[in-house]
Image 1 (cartoon, one colour):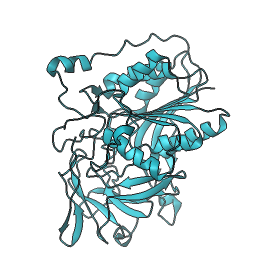
Image 2 (cartoon, one colour):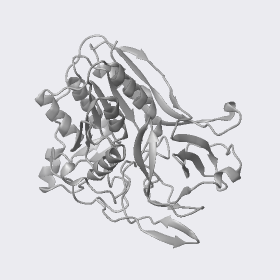
Image 3 (cartoon, one colour):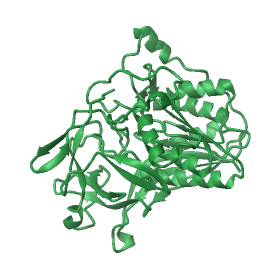
Length: 410
């Protein structure tokens, strides 16, 4: 894990965060959106020390410099014990269960759209003067310009609007490459306070272009908050691959008991900072630094159950002790175990998938097979962001960010 703080340097009259000084990203190349999914916290975040639950060994070690899998959920590229330990780490935790019964009802495609939110807006998108796609976003009070490979059209707003940006990601625009932030107006700090759905947290400019939150997830978070508030009983929420904890804090604020799992101690450190900023330190949130598959297998053996499960796995990753995660290889078993972790009165199981070459129908049918015999309905489709900065709403284009599938009881 890279632990060096990003350095600030003056270059050409602008303050820039220099690339190559920290590993802020952690997911493999995203073939759907230039913004997904190296979403990992700044290496300057403290790991939370004694507050991190030690379900397994504490993470350590460093991946190859500059590799996008440097932070989440991979921590150690060479696990102790050599090849034998590596082989053991990849042994399936159990076999897939044989499911019987009717498939759940299907509702697909269903597009979940986020537009003008209090705390986030996609202002515009399109090709710059070099023919490269970009997006202009508003995160809290900051206007940010970042690469966006799917923005294949001309910009909808004048350059004068884009030139008002407070921060712009420059340098290496490949998804697995390090870059830097330029500040055209005035130098900015690494973090700034944000709020979404009434919950405070820190945005952070990372060297893999991300800012610590993925606003398209608001669609799932709003659904989750509503189910918690209407349940009439305390709900237990499991947030797998939980990243910086915004979803966990929204659930806790709504009244749920939350278990947050991520293999990156940096991500959990950032999440605990967010918890303190939000004033939710008294809420029941367990922060677990552990390989997700090992954790859910242990929860299954223990008989622990959850009413809502959110899971947002990467395409590729490594756990604290060299455990290897491959999405297409391990996703069926992960969902199978998650089904067994649902309570007798569940509210839902949500899967979001980034960085994959697949139609949403792939995870849609997988979710239906996983929940065979359980009744309910599987809703699947895409999460999209809609521009809101145009005078004519008909001119506002949409950016697809991810695939999703969620099972809901009836």
